[in-house]
Length: 294
Image 1 (cartoon, rainbow, N blue to C red):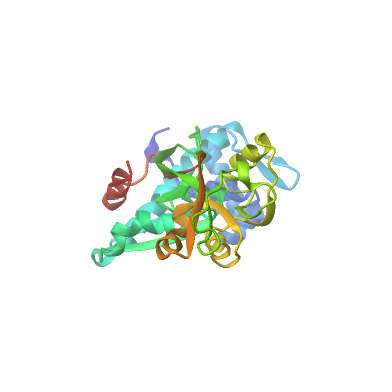
Image 2 (image 1 turned 90 degrees about the vertical axis):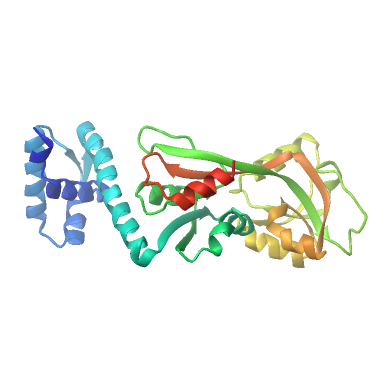
């Protein structure tokens, strides 16, 4: 079978059924009948010479060949979506950059990273937030160009991701400037019994902090656990508690003298990564951002 004999319309129908796992649901989404959809998938299976699905109860499960065909289909139609996005983004001389950022990442860090683009009238930014897995799914479907994260992800045979290290920052203990003027605490040794606001359990550095406290036999009084760094910034500013966080989260409050660094630990580090797909369309402005981060 030559590639010109492959019916991409049938392949598209297979792709949609494989992603839903339900023939009926896919038929509804495609505004066609279930029998017509089944017939076209059978034609694709006849052309390929192997079955693509087996039925498991009410669901359709992929065969080993079906898994292989799905992997290539994701690339084929994902690249088609990216092509349309790039063409739409270049309309009237404007290029669109689609950036995803994990919800636990500092918005100050994200803004600092994209700052070179904010004054560029030829760029339109699309900024999304979500869990890492949600964003990686959108990335592999070519609905995002890059994902900023605070944890590394490995590449695998299905996703083919590139994870680029952007830098790291020591974690600080900050508190109200008027209450902690001139005072310094060791982190974690001096935190026993003190009121603290901490990043939530989903944050990459929380496990590091808990391990340090356990090793030092220190038990601070945890008053708040916050995944969202924008909310943690507000709590650090307004609660009067000490807060453990990357300084970039409260960079403005530190500069204005509202908060001050009370302590810092080089054993606690937040790392920053830019994640892209291996076969993505090159965007010159994104390439410059990635290069400047090295």
